[in-house]
Length: 403
Image (cartoon, rainbow, N blue to C red; front, side, top):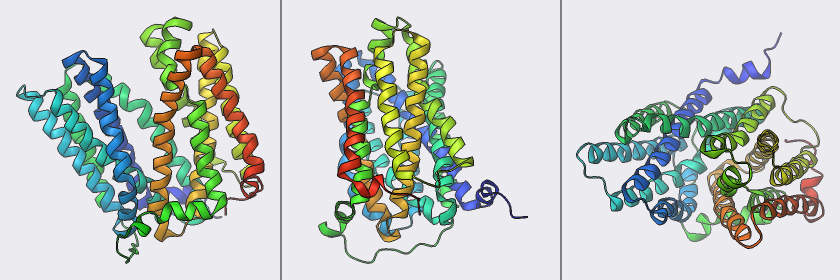
């Protein structure tokens, strides 16, 4: 009797080396970003400086992502991921030393933020483009679902672990981050794969080849742009502190639960998709999941019950998980391997832009109309986008199977 697909996936040792490298690396990265932000606020007490930490990470990530995508197609992807982890180990060690000797200051934190942004620019495209080289095509959706579940564990556990360790001081957090990312570096270096490098020179046309490919392939343009507009309009993360304080009256502890709820819903569905992957009507289900995401955001926006708000956010995370796994699987299956790094880089830019601009959009509309109107209108906009995509991208709506 043939083993089940899940057991077949477990048999791919290189995939699991990378899975553990990704889990430990993202956990360390999440801890480091939280600790750096807290450390800055502890030193300066300035909300402006706190905002600069995020900006100084975002801008270099945006500028370096396209070159990183070209590098992912030109060189060994496992080694690129390992190099990004090694850079973050060095960053953490610098913070360990400067904190131990009382040398950490505002300018150093901002410089570290820039270095973190560069490291993440190379880390993100490789995380997506490496998986198809480690498993056969028929296991790719399960592999991406399992990778997504590990990502959610890191997103939930990393900030919580970093916050708990920060009670003992930033030095303890930085040392723990260095250890976790050193483990990720070693595991990534142990990943074995067949690497077929792109031989062309790094011209602008080569660097931008991911944009060109997506623009010409309307299915992928629909997939990537759907995520961009859905998250841009439907994201409510930036307004969670306002809901926790002014609407639900649950304080900082409740805020932590609100932030964790989408990741928890996403984790549960990611594990379910690993066991029961989507086989038919994947385009319709992707668009339906986007509509459910928008509807759950509307429910959250209108809710004055803490429990209902938690459930609505968990449902939004569950729907988003279906969308993420389906989008990334289609993106990887429809892209030739020699372009996967650059196409994944474009996808990373869209994800980063939608998250950052979505937070700005939510805040701007909330300042104008209030938080409830901002969230509800965003949810309605997400549903309208999904409906529009049925007509604008019929190849996506009619897509039946992943392969």
